[in-house]
Length: 113
Length: 115
Figure (tube, rainbow over the protein chains, first blue to last red):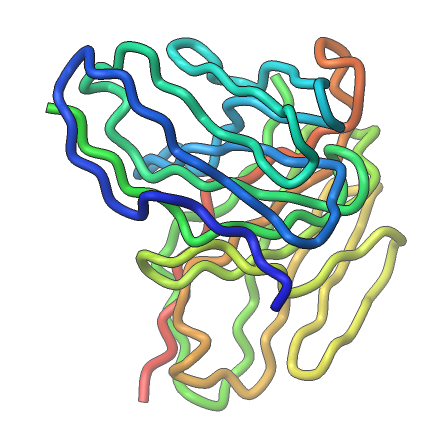
């Protein structure tokens, strides 16, 4: 089954404790992206990757890191999480460029205390 | 600042009626337009996309694009309770700072289909 998977789905952590949210796709897509979704603010792009070893900042990159060492994986790293990073996070992938159709993972709900 | 704007709703329609969801965008150079549906607590899923002016139909869904007015809409015919969700409009444009295309999402319109 073609899909984008994220882990964990739910996470409660404390301020400053490093965490990683994994994202994997099995559709051989070149493009991958991370979004956060907050009430009233919609989906905002954090980072995106056009291909292996190619990543770039989205609209709200502060406090986040990413890497793209393999085509299928695009982990999101929070080195020192803060409460304002409490949000619903979505990973997405797509066969084309940044402006083309994107397929979303199930989401990761993060609470930073 | 490129923007995609949608009325947050909720938009309430009776079962069987036509639901009309609207979206305006600020970047006149925008090239592609997408509608996603998002159920509460779930991820967005693509309903349809449109590139050219006019109408595009897919089952009960029709997307309408008017580039001159910078307006895109989604019509849902014979609305069902299962259509109750938030509908996200997304617009592809050229991101000068990023050096490439970018997808910008609106904040979504909540649709409620009532029995």
